[in-house]
Amino acid sequence: MPRVTVDGTTFYYQQVGAGPDVVLLHGISGNLAIWPLINLMPVLAADFRVTAYDLRGHGYSDTPPSGYTSADMAGDLVNIQRALGLGPMYVLGHSFGGVVALHAAVLYPEAIAGLVLSDPYFPGLRHLETRVGQWSGWQEYKEQANRAGLEVTEEDWFDVGQLFKQAAHLPPERHEMFRKELGLAAMERLTRLAATTCGDDVKAVAGLTEERIRSVRHPSIALYGENSPFLATCRYLEQNLANCRAVLVPDAKHRAHEENPLAYVALVHKHLRELAGLAPLQGRGGAA
Image (cartoon, rainbow, N blue to C red; front, side, top):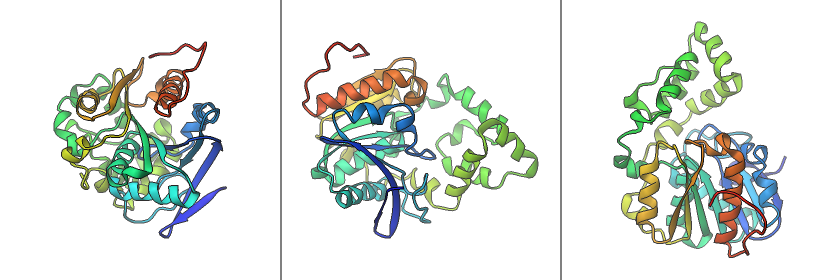
């Protein structure tokens, strides 16, 4: 398996294609496998050199005890870029991966060519999201968590650290509930992160303040599910970033890449080509 070590931490990665560099960042508790599974990497490889890697603490990458803020992970991204000899990157980040991507544009502007921000929620913009508890999918999320033996309340919807700790300390009678609902692999992922500072770090502004978010000038796409709980953030990005366009994925919520993968892949491909100045695809449909 291809691996790269930077600052003492080893990361697993995959790379396909040739052309301008695109880097794909998954969200917290995920891994890079989602991108080939939805066929995104093969599609993009027709026009780009595509690199995806497991974030620290995820997949086949190392799990250091700390270093999980968006600033820390932006440093990982740029160090991996340098180690692999990548040029200026078009970065697609989903959820916290999008926070990392934008933070990299703030801290290392010369390293970033453009951004596709896929449903990120920013701790520095938390004041915008006052209605997440009223989101239509919230009740479904709580019910699934309860079936898995976890306790979730509207007040702690963003406290992923408490979910990590609950998974790591489930009493025996709840182990089977979790296994049936989410699988042992999910328990392993959450338990692994419970031993780190990830739960606290992802809630930290870590220097990515509202002022610094507004300073980003890179060409950007705010790509959100049309039923995402974070549409207030989507609107904010379009209105306050100098060069940002909002695009909605139909029939999707927060995890559009899983909920409507065909539309998601088509939109990502189309808009990355536009960001890179490539000619429009001919004879292909898809959402605008």
